[in-house]
Every structure is written in C-alpha cells, then in structure tokens.
Image 1 (cartoon, rainbow, N blue to C red):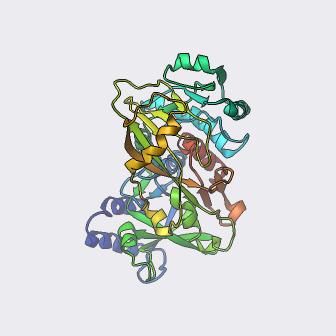
Image 2 (cartoon, rainbow, N blue to C red):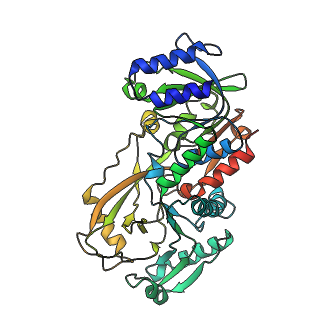
Length: 433
C-alpha cells in the first residue's frame, strides 16, 4: 500500500500544492499512529536517503535481494550533485592505504563496474592512465604510489622511464611514469540511469523532491522526518521546520553525500554520540581544452597527488573532449540546509584558469595560452581538511552508533563512483538482516 502511495506521491511532488496535500491526506488515512495531528506515519522496509550513484547502487542491491525499497531524494531527479560533477574516471585502486575501504572497494568495484557496463551496454572505455613525475624530486613519491598499488592487488602496473612514456604520449613531459592499464572512463549518467531502471524493475520506488530533515528514536526504531523540498527551500530559518510525513523503516542507509554528516547530527540519538565526523567541503573546477583539432593525449594523465586531491589531471570523455581538473578550493560556513539541498556555488570563474596553466604545463608544456575554457565544478564530501591526511570512507552500523537498522555513509568522495557497486554489495551482505 505504502509503496504505491509514495510512488504516486513522488511523481506528483513537483505539481500543485493541492495535489500534494491530497496525497499526504491519503497517507494520513492509512497512518499507523500519529506523530502529531499534521504528521501521518507509515512503516517501510528499506529506505535509502539520497539518489546519487552510491545510493542508487545500494537501492538496486537491496531490491535484488527481494526487499521493498524506497529511495528519498531532495532533488527533482537522481545524481544531481557529486555523482554528476566529477571526472567520470574508473579508478584502478592505486592510491589508497592497504586494506582500507577505499582500496578494497575500488579494486572490487572497478571489476564489478567494467563487468556491469559490458553486460548492460553502458558507454565506457578502458583508456589506461599514466601517473607522471614531472621532475626528479617527485620520483620517490611515484615509487610509493607504485608500491601501494601493488599492495592493493592492482594488476598490470608498470614503471617506465620518461622517454618511454613520451613515446606513448608525444605531448607529455615527464622524467618517470606509472602505466595503469586498468584505469578508464564511464558515462556516469548512463550508468546511474541503468541502476535506476534495474532498481525499479525490482519494485524499488523513488520519491524525488522529498527531503529527510531529521529523525528520532522511539524504543529501538528510528523515525525519519520527511518534508517537501519546496517547504525546506521556503523555510525562514526561524520557525520550527515541521515534517509533512514520518517514516519508520526497518533498514536505513544514509547515503546523502554532501549532506550525510549534517543529517546524521539531526538524528536525536546521534546528536551527543560523538560518532558523526566533521564534514569538510572541497570545490574543484574543471576546464575544457579548446582550439585543438585532435586530443593531445590518448591516456588519462595524472600528476603526483596534491593536498586534498589527485592534482589537476587530464581526463577524456567518451566524445573525445579533453578536461583538466579538478583543483582544490576549501569551502567554509556550509549550513545544514545548503548541504541537504545542494545549494552550492558551482560557477567556474574564467580567471581561475590562470592557476591551471602553470600546473598543466608541468607535464603538458605545449599548452597554448587562451586554450582553456570554463567547464564545470563539483564539491567533494571530505572528512579531512586542509593539510590533514586523507581519511578513509566511513561506514557506520549499529555496532558504532547504537541505532538498530541504520547505516551511515560518510566521506564517500573519490573513488566513490568506481566503488559504488562494491559498497552496495558490502552493505547488503554485511548489514541487511
């Protein structure tokens, strides 16, 4: 009953207020018990918060196990935030500490992603990648990266001299490089669309324009507060933000991406627990290469990683467009509502290219003045700030926070896209009862 009601509700949330009120009135008629006169309640089986690539992969995995799944997303469609604002790279699993979630999920997720894309005709390409040392002082770091990749079980890695790398890529300038043949690119939108289709084919329901604004515990059950996104957008910031609906799931995955930590802190059971990590936000801009007849590179080209990211690298999309990025710009003062509703500044100032040219010319010296055009930007949900060492993905179950049936996903930045199916498999086998 609930599934069909919410499916109808999700399809009409963007329509007139009168229609929305009629839907909630219908829910109220079938409510289990009232939170207040204006807050109907419904029980659900599995609820996934967030329809980014990881949330979609989780929803698919749960639905394939025969569970009734509801995905609640604040935006008007899936994958509007970090999942659609990245390099679209399939990572091999080289950079991350041995046995970390990032290393394990990236290696396994890459295998699953290539297999899934081939089976479902998702556009992708195994381009290979060169990680380059542009000066001799970077060679020791390159050696460390090589050793870490081998420890992580990444096959096919090969260290080569700069001259060999330049024979492969004549426009490249470096003194040494690692060839990663398993790296590639994927059409992330097509991948997410396929996940949505498969989840829906297995009876998962998507409710867009619906925002989870908090939750509370009653006994051992968590009750989630759901509001229309429009109501949240129009909230004055002073009055009490009342939910329109309270959902009581058996199993919850907080996959809210940029808003996951802020949302977890709005669950009353976690507010004083100390288990919710501090959120940091790093904006990264991309510039596209213009005024060229052919792409200068056939492989992805990555410099030595920098503070907060993997450096301004060369990526290719499936149409042959060359992109450079992302850089790292730390963002402060992000409020809860902005993180829930993805209210970030995604503009790419043309002047920012001035910082890109010298970084790119370290490995691509023939880059011409005026050839970079603003592309797009994305925000990375990080758990470490400036000049702090990177932190692993954080996946919290009941044994960490004490709330039955709740799984929190924090800091799912790169390689989140590559890792998505492996994360979903882990959640559905490790936590689902």
